[in-house]
Image 1 (cartoon, rainbow, N blue to C red):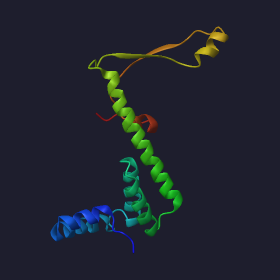
Image 2: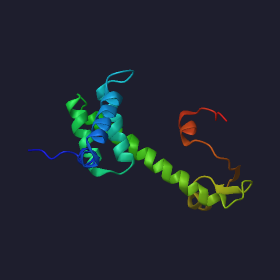
Image 3: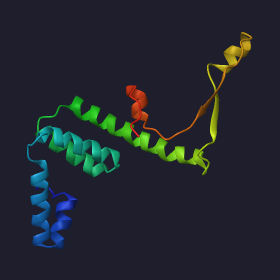
Length: 146
């Protein structure tokens, strides 16, 4: 006999009313609408990966497979979630650059510095004005919408 998922076991402990409310909410959210159950299951799996819940990811993988998702779809969704997680880490790390100096500039050199020195090429020094932006806009080439 398969053990119930922890969220279900927890809501049962809280009482029948809470348990039924949780199940009704899950049922309403997961029913086909603009997105299919398969698509919602893949999203759930990606969210579980992004929040680093191993048991959740396994449960959502099982549900996604039942709903018709392929292993390839599942892995791609998990990869996107990993990218989002990494991006959120970079977003947090970016705050370390701010140091409460919004007008501070970042200096960086372009190209391979060792190669330029060997070939006696001048080093390019570019200065950029930092401002918060979404990394996805740079990936997709879209301008920020402020």
